Length: 359
Image 1 (cartoon, rainbow, N blue to C red):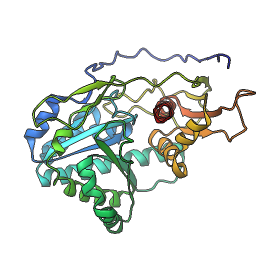
Image 2 (image 1 turned 60 degrees about the vertical axis):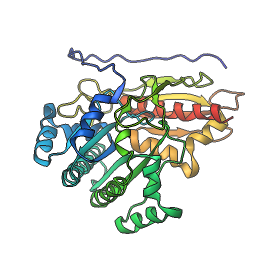
Image 3 (image 1 turned 90 degrees about the vertical axis):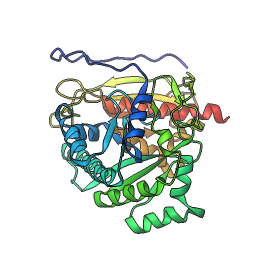
Image 4 (image 1 turned 180 degrees about the horizontal axis):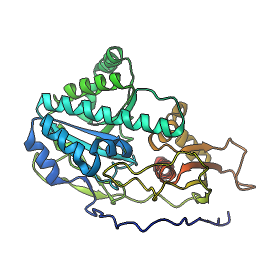
């Protein structure tokens, strides 16, 4: 097929201070992981959205510093441009301490996630509900504990908390050796669920070895199983997705008056947001029919996950509704605030690239 044209609109904005960027390629560096391991026997690795991270940090990081002082729990939060591999814009929050301090900090983290959800609902004009969403990062061994024999423990957790714990399929996570458990629902139920999961996974003696985490887009991924405690982890380059028929066409459009604009969270740089708000845009590109099916996922699960995690709207054309005449490819439309669109676009491209390795 022929090439596509890209157009963009440059919006004037006040001069911005140059952001400090960490090029180390780590969400949680080896030295940070070692500090967490020495801080306390209890530990947990979570993924929270960029907005929730801003709420947790507070202005200049003051809120988090106060929470660490009052709870006694140590928290290492990945920077605003470092996301867990394959899950942008989710940042890594690794915590460690005593049982009591970790429990207390989990309450504050879930509260920050709920506040971020409330703020987003308010800006989008949706009904505001006491809801939260976060992910627990589980080594395969810990995941087996949470699932239990024939799924018995996972079922028990659902019965006790009232929410389902969705665990990513074995071997499908971007980081080998780890799986993600998504907790979503009423704030109190999410807190109960993450607390129960936290208690369960402390039985896994290898848990602390997985605190060290590389960043998305840094060209590396963890090569598990991990080495012995204290040893350096082995890393291997990640091959970029193949440049098949995926060619984006960006179609910016002005933000309508009163439309939601992603603000900069207090004390942090907003994910991709320009001063005064995020420019709305739409990206159109094509994927094969096989890639489209994989992007949608079983029962639409992956597509729903992309929309929930990024805040962007992702739509795929039906079979026979081609973007390019005479082509069998299907079109993908990603729309919303530019930062959300870019995050969703990256997730969809990675998902499509998986089809190449499966064939």
